Length: 300
Ligand SMILES: C/C(=C\COP(=O)(O)OP(=O)(O)O)CCC[C@H](C)CCC[C@H](C)CCCC(C)C
Ligand SMILES: O=C(O)C1=CC(=O)c2ccccc2C1=O
Image (cartoon, rainbow, N blue to C red; front, side, top):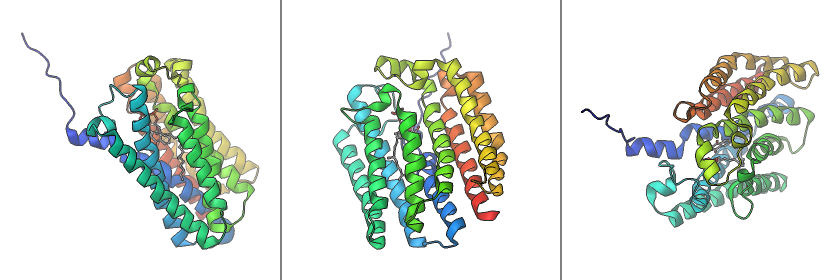
């Protein structure tokens, strides 16, 4: 009798899956887009502020992800997640300390921006983002367990982060800045939405009512298709209203990524092993559409 060997992923693969390097494009995109919108309006770029903001955003997202593994280890939802940093190290206090160190450094960078500007607005907005990030996963709130993650994600990475990046360059606000934040907010929330498709069983067992647990995978796949389409409809609409420049039509070049994502999820929504990579297809869509969107503000 022949038996099929169970192939364990290598330690290196598990660590890469735990650290999720591609996910960090999510932190830099609002800073790039907010700065591009500001540059279009002022024709000025403060490079030190831009670079400090980029590094701080990456550190803050590292805090969010490391502390997510810490808090999830307390509810038992990650007990089958071999690529949790807490499960890999077996050292929760170390990961908790490291996450808070990242948060401290990230906030310090934002504090430096506020200090250079002698204006606390950017710091206040980013502290609000961090509070929302905590409320998503930390006790006693754990709002992600109620299915509120996508709304939190939209506001944190959309209106709040874009406003902070725009304000850090201009010390002012604008309607275009708000309009631009909707595009980035939606494309970021799509990633979080996609991250739930393969986790339905573990989520139900831990009492997490993610949007996919609430809707079911088939209706989730349909909603994904409509939300993805909304990125392109929104762009055309806001160009028509004169809020986005004509250049943002460049985002249509990201359509192949949108089609790859939605057709993959449509086909495999109820097969956890096959759909599990869809959040990285969503990261591709977010990255390419975001870069094209920002270029649209810079080019024409
Ligand atoms: C950690 C996040 C998602 C993972 O959630 P989940 O527990 O379902 O996944 P696992 O299966 O991998 O355990 C991200 C959650 C994002 C959150 C809703 C909002 C975070 C706000 C940030 C702190 C804002 C950073 C802004 C920056 C650009 C300055
Ligand atoms: O690990 C994840 O699933 C996610 C991590 C993360 O930092 C993030 C940020 C913004 C939207 C979605 C996500 C994730 O899904």
